[in-house]
Image (cartoon, rainbow, N blue to C red):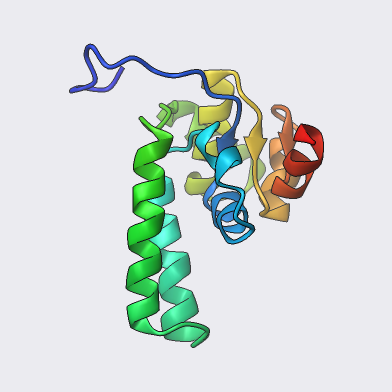
Length: 146
């Protein structure tokens, strides 16, 4: 358990979601699936970057809308509870052997360490993750739970 987490009880988590699946489930209004899952600390930064990209580069939303969306996403992440731990050494091994980013490898490592499936809508990550553990897309998750 990370420092400062003493005494905090972890709830049961069914899946580990990466930032791509969190954003897609959020925009689909599937908050129930988000609250039954967890993620890593990295997700908040990746989500912030994805929202920044929609506002600054793609001009899909205004900066004000981006700020409101980021606030809502951060509240959602807090509701999801304590981020799951990952193994830094295992993440480095996976990243090096699979030629993926350390960021992506950390999601695989966290899901493996915590014994839960990884949900990602990043097709490259999904392809690699399937070599290491049970992995699926958010669309597959929605079909699985119906």
